[in-house]
Length: 129
Length: 246
Image (cartoon, each protein chain N blue to C red):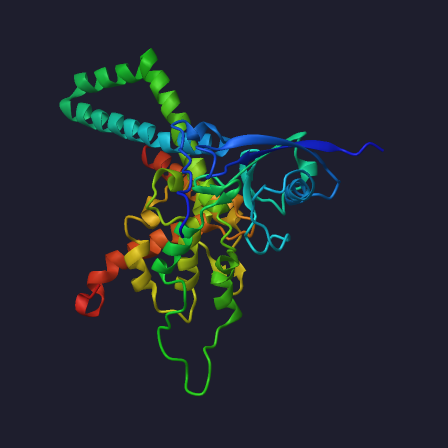
């Protein structure tokens, strides 16, 4: 198409502050850092466990320290947000059809929560709670 | 009864005289049943005949009148003035280049749409002396994705479109999915050469705003995630298929 070059708008660096949904999206993306950090901490725990009782006690002591507790609370909040937002999005990635009717998104979301609860109960049983 | 009035602030851009867009404000009546399009038409008819914008059906089926109203991409014919405050700011759709005033560039979109082959590529010939048969349950699977009116509101809502000029975008990918899901179609592998490329579904990070703003309920975000799953499965099972051909 001939004519003057169209004016191209620029996307501001803080584009994600312009909409609440964008802010929620960025928080959701940030959760991966906390998920990764917690997994890293768990791996360190396994290494300390392998290194013997003193190392393990040291690890538990670090977890019980003030920064350790703050880290775990913040990580828990982000992991919970990660989980809840994922469960909300999952139904649109996996449509299930029965004839001409689509299984309601709410059922699929509930099924995820049910699986989470069952897995948690199983793990608690296995660790002897 | 005093008639309600609003301040319609419109972004203007005249390429022959302006180096960048400016704002103009118009005092416009706001009848109870008016939409933003009515206000724009009032300006054009009574206040400023130079105002340029697209519109056609005025009933949300043609996809022509997409604009940003108070920061949200909407169809001007579907945005009721009674739902907005005294000041209504109208801009061209975000992320699109601007030709003039409220007219955003649709050429790039139109040029790239054929890349995903948005037409039926039959997997096999229809039965002799007959046509393709399709069950209502088979139609149901892809019908939602046929509703796209190419209004480009989803392109305005998607930050990845704004950040990556090579990204195909929600509407084009949803249309590819419409054909992939059609039981008469056999062209998914062909389309995946484009949709599973770096310009395709993998640029999407599931912000989901495209589906929020879609005026026809197409759910392009869902379509794209379903295509990610399908193309991943195709990639994993490719060596298992006969001959191992891609």
